[in-house]
Image 1 (cartoon, rainbow, N blue to C red):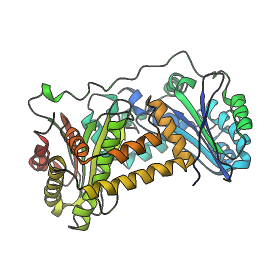
Image 2: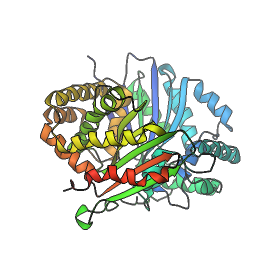
Image 3: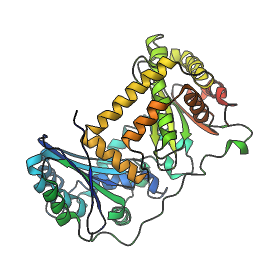
Image 4: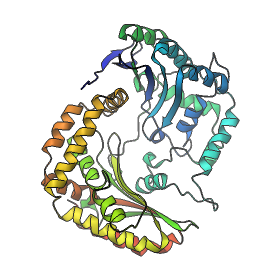
Length: 443
């Protein structure tokens, strides 16, 4: 078994670089990760992070339009793309390892010298992308965006990543440049690269093209709005808060999403929450797929997911169900979750998840891109929890710890619920009945 390792470098302008040598690989992957996303926006510029990500591909100093830039970046053999998230933005370029040096030069021109060409064309593209999140009545049907805005109302964590339509229609080149000046700075960025090309030559080339002063930046590093007090303490409430979004949609199916706030970061407690998530959904034989899909055929798909940000996170359950089986799904879901918060998981269940979880972690060590991304997340979250540390924690997990974790997650002072479908607003009593099973378990 071959495990990869990472070497860390800092360029003369403070930019961090993580290098992974992959001597037997024919390909390279070069990425730049920026510690900014939709949570660093306000109501007035919501969508600017995602808009900027799009505009970065419209052209650069050396390649004046999107087609010439794309041709140059695709000439290395593979793909280039980007992703904007709530907290982070990432751009990447992949190709033939023999082209590593040329690719670094091209990628630096792309990242450091965008020309914002054809802004109105790209605005139209984004508005078309946005249209898929709305129904014919103009109501949002994006459960992820609605769940975040419902749970984190009046906080930037609730900002839709794609933005607000009225704001996107008005975003200017000046606002895009301001976002880039404030956040696309060496202190907030990390470059990762895995390649068979030599470490010395790779770092030397990165120093040449990325290590100098970035002319677009200014001495600004805006503080992020903290989420530490966004969810009230349960002790200050008479009962937990239900944050509901019941959205009518003329369809024959309902989209269901239940969401709970958790702690954030990367720590032992996060490992326990992830383990709980896997108890519920880690393959067909785990609880939600087995008991709701396989045994009763209530849904085509049901999933349980987690997201972890710097100081807060989310734990969610998603399903899509036909109108005639909604009541049955919610009743069955209530029954399953009552068991989770009141009974110890079975020993064989614990052992099954331990093996699968540890196997997944071992694969990180033999997958360069996952290993590098893990290191980036650890740095941005100020964590020193290694993959081996996480494996040790997983191996030591007990039934008692998982039951305690379930009570903490589902006993939160606020829980969100999104229901999108025909006459969804008439289902409030049904939804509140389901959520009431969690009323008296918080500590």
